[in-house]
Length: 387
Ligand SMILES: [Mn+2]
Figure 1 (cartoon, helix red, strand yellow):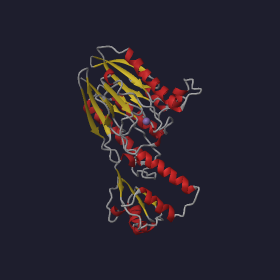
Figure 2 (figure 1 turned 30 degrees about the vertical axis):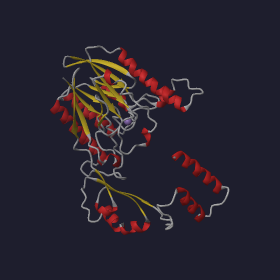
Figure 3 (figure 1 turned 90 degrees about the vertical axis):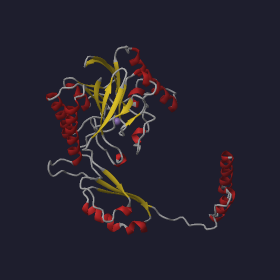
Figure 4 (figure 1 turned 60 degrees about the horizontal axis):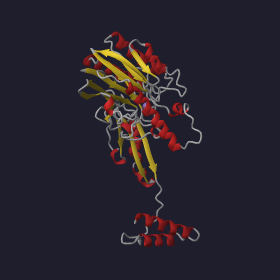
C-alpha cells in the first residue's frame, strides 16, 4: 500500500487578528497566529517522522496571499528545509485561490518548486512517479479561476448562466483530458483545489458563492483517491474524495471543526483514510450573554459573545461584558441591538384566515389606494400559488 499524507489550506496570517485584535506572544515577540502556525508545522514534521508517509499532498492555499510576509514565507521554507534534512519525502502541491495572482505569475507558492522533490502545479498537469515500487499518476487541478478561464473564451452575447455552464464544461473537459491518458496498472491520484457542490460548510464565506464546482462525482471511478483543498471543514465527499480541511481554525465559523491532516493508505483495490488531529489549532468559543457571568476563561481560547437583543436587555449584561473584556485576552463582542418597535395587536389571532389578518393589518396601518389594491392583488396571487 502507498501511504500519503494529505493536507491543505495552511493560510498563515502573521499579521492576522485573533478575536478581532492582533495579539503578541511575549515569548517570541510574534503574533499568536504566527506562533500557532509554527507550532502546527513542527507538529506536522513530527507526524511525518512517526508515520513515514511515502509522499505529502498539499492541496492548495499554502499561503494566505500571493505575497506573504517574510515571517510566513520563512515558516514554510523552514518546514521544507527540515523535511529535506530529515526524512526526505516528495511533496506534491497545487496553487489555491489565495496563492495566485489573477495574472497567474510570480506567486510565492511557486517557490515551493525550488526545493528538490517538491512540485507545485500552477496549471492543470500530470506527473508520473514511482513510489515504493508502485507506478503513481498524479493529476493536478489548481484552483480554477473564473477570470482566467473566461479570458480564454469568446463570450460575446453569452448569458451569465451560459457562461457558468461553459466554464463547468471546460473544467470537466480538463479532467476528461487527464483520464484519456490513464493506464491500467497505475495508482491514480487527483489533487485539486476548489468547491464541490455537495460539500458542507458551517459559515459560508461570501468568496465561495461564485466558485466553479469541481466534478468529483463524475470522475469517481477514474481515480483511486481524490485529494482536495479549499473548503476548511474536513470531510468525505464520495467513496474516494476527501477534503483534508485546514491545518488550523481560521475563525469562529470553524469553531466546531476538528483540524489536522489525513493519513491515506491506497492501492488499486483498497483505500483507508485516517484523520490525525492538530493539537496546536487554537480553540474558538462563542458564548451567549447569560454565559458571561463568573466565566473563568481559558487564557489560550478565543472567545466571542454573540447575541441579538434589545438595548434594555443588553444593559443588564453590560457589567459581565466589561468583566470579560478586562480578564480575557481574546474577547470579541458581536452583539446586534434590535429596536423593538412592533406594536403587538392582541386582536390578531391564530384562528383568523389570511384574508382576515391582512384586512385587519391594512386597516390598522391606514393603507390607501393605489397601494391598497396593489397589496390585495399581490396577496391573491400568492394565495393562488399556495393552493
Ligand atoms: Mn481556497
